Structure formats: structure tokens, C-alpha cells
View 1: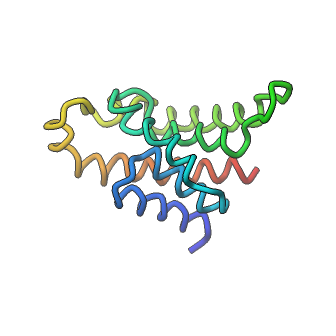
View 2: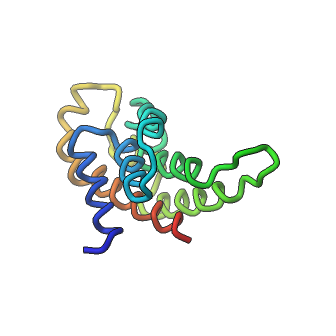
Length: 147
């Protein structure tokens, strides 16, 4: 198994282990590049479940933006934003093309604020939707960061 496939599996392991979608992608990317995980994990936490259970942007997609900022974000206002904007935009467009929407609620069909609805759909979402998305986005992030 190649390193990219291994890290996609690692993202799934994080997701299976109780981390949310955003956290799982960010942690796997940190593992891949050997970067510190504590602060990125803290930053990623509220972006899961469509931005804190609001069903908005998918947490895994949000993770791509966190990772681009973490690895390619600017360090002063004089630096160009393009190093992070352009790869994040490519991932955003690939995501919308593949999954039809950037919104968690559109993709899952679940109101993330309704605990009963989430519980009824948890296994389906985890295995059929969100887990594969976590892996896909992790792969896209790695590809973009290795360019």
C-alpha cells in the first residue's frame, strides 16, 4: 500500500475512533507531513458536522481549508493569498462536482441538530457517506500539498 492510501486509511481510523470529519482529515494530514497536531486539532473541532451541527459546509471540506492555511497560508499581509486560495478552490470545486453540494445537510439529508435523526442515520452516514468523503478529501489535500 502506498503512503497516500495509508494516510487515507488513517483518516478513516481517526473518524472511526470518534474524531469528527474535519478533525480526522486534519489529523491524518498532520501525520502525513509530520507536523504538530495539538493546535490544528483544536482549530478543526468546531468545523465538524457541517460547522458545529449546522449542516452547512461539510466538515471534511472545511478540513481542506484548514490544511491549506496550516501548510500554505501566508505569514504576513504582504504575502500572496494564492498559495492557499488556489489549491483550496480546486478542492472545493472537485468536492462540489463529485458530491453535488458543499453542504453537509444536502449530502446527508440529515438535520444535524436533531439528535434522534442523527442517531437513526449515524451508521449509514458514517459508512456510506462521511467516511468515504473523509478519505477522498484527505487524498485531495495530500495531492494539492505535494504539488
